[in-house]
Length: 97
Image (cartoon, helix red, strand yellow):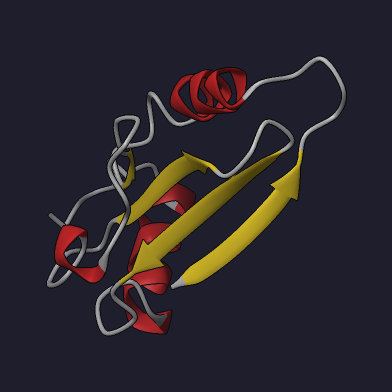
């Protein structure tokens, strides 16, 4: 689990950060950006090869980003299978979902 506090540049909002993450990871089958107000926890990723990310407004100037993976699944072995799939033209999620 990674817990990250980010200071927003003047004029930017947490809603923009949420939208940016949703857009960036929209086509990534192994990454879930959780809806606003939902905090990423281990229950979102246990026994999966996925990562869960949540964006939580802290103040007008800060957001709290939480990223969670199940390191027993998304660890080195799962990452190696994902990279193998990509290198040899298989669907990224083959043998992972």
